[in-house]
Image 1: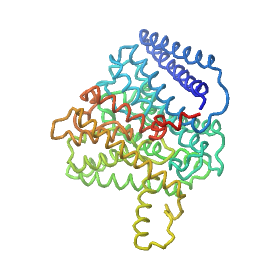
Image 2: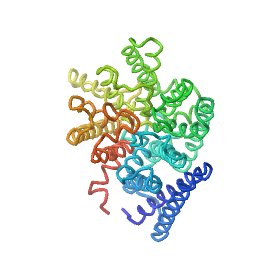
Image 3: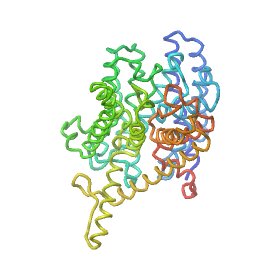
Length: 480
């Protein structure tokens, strides 16, 4: 483990974060928000100078080892989040460091939980930074899952899915894959923004909300989430959320062969989960009218499963059974290699199929049985990795729920358990809204400050899929 090389890479990430801040300053200039533009520009320059200065001082070169790769992912994300607090603090948009860390963690982790009650009260520069942080976070996690993890030879963790980064047996270099993914990500975001322009959004809102939809982030430029916009805007974001929850490796390969979507078993399972959950929610809302039930059930199912977290209605008024279903859907997530959070479809399939095989093995102890998904045998290390991840994920959820239950979730005593569970599941799955007191825009201000610090940690842990953060606390990672 070379600390000099590790620190140099982290400094490069911090420097890139500072460069991204300059775009927020530019938006401030365009909208004549001179004070915020100037403050963010000075802060961005300071971040860039510190990052570049330390990187030159260290002067480390060479390829990262697997250990260093894990450490870089975890530490860089934390450093990027801390740097991301600066625009909120220097502009006075948020007044405490804890709130700024929460908002930045929610941004880069593409969670969408917020302490801002009315986003429209923020300057365009700060709104742009909120949206951009989610867009960058979404792209970052796609690159990690599709390019970096295969390069490190860690497919056994069950994060790679059923398509290679470029439809090839041997993954190409990270830089090549990242470039292809960036072009695809930018193209899809631009298409989403172009469609949203025809809604009741302004041009700025169309671009900002396209950023937060394609990244499955969930930040919105107005209070009321997507319920503040017309049905057309909701229809566009519905489609974009489904696309964002699909593997970007699959998107890339399907550009050449569109039939790959239907042949991909994980994609078919993903669509089945979306359809089934939408139908169950719609049936539960049937008393509100057929059209309203279908619209709310479908939109909510897609929003929660893809972990975007947009809302068009407050689920707090729904039946307890539907609220429990929403919490359960927070665990699912989209496809591996997508911008979505959660456990992921392929992991859940691996774990459930492996459990079924274990039951069959009890009846037929001498039989040779393999875990299969769509008729194809799954490698033992993939199944083992999926089981390990799911166990760690559930333990993290239980720990978060317990801690929030002790701290208090801001809900009435009778609703505290469901509220704590929904908040923990939402943060860990990078969904955004919870149930109870934190359900509305800026609702997380109802949570004690200690609770928001816990959620900030859960958001980052969930976004990086647990292991890069967990390994930072192991001795083996730091041994030379």
